[in-house]
Image (cartoon, rainbow, N blue to C red; front, side, top):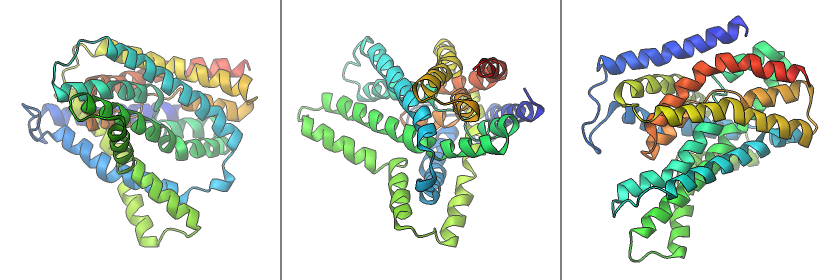
Length: 340
């Protein structure tokens, strides 16, 4: 592992540690004693989810050069990534179905309904910017970085949008089960409305609509969106540390370890096999998509978990464990790639 990657991992750990210190020292206030109370970690998460992440998504989508996208490379990454997403989601839904009924508690039913999508998010959504860009630059140079940035440009758009639709569908089902007037049509209508009028989906749709006009973003709008988007990475890292200080991780570490192993080993293995033997990828493109899949769980996993108030301790622990474990799995995947 190069010094550049090591320093980047260390900087991430230190940023998380700063957030943890802020939480332990209560610089941002006390954690909420009850659901519904003001909570510093949740307020930061909401700020990221409703302001900064939408700005990043809209700017990225609006500026994307759709005609220049390397379709084979993109398919070689996203086809297996979507397959892993749906596989983990299906497994988590099966596990959730085996839990005792929520006994009329709608809040608990919604948390359980969101669990499959939240866990799938933590397994498939990698830290493609803070860790991924330095890794691609150090290992594969300008050519590899170009491929990586192309994958990054669609990473959130594809996976986050897919998981948003899945979680909103599950939530609509859960709410319908607690209402006497429930119907399939109403469930579909609520799902479509919540999936479109959403801090993730709506900016993507608006960005694509602007992109299709062929017009460049106005300079002022571009500057504002860029300024807001640059806050996502540091805010999310501090938020992970803050959540570590506020959240009781007892009982979540076992699942978080499973998520970490799936993220660092299963996800890249599936992408490698499908990309190489399914799409015929080799050389730098194969190495880039494999290492993209091998990245640790992204900090957006915690924001997603907080948005739906489900599995927050797991997402927090998985982000930290996978970032630490990544230092040991990088040499493993580089050795595998060297033999192909």
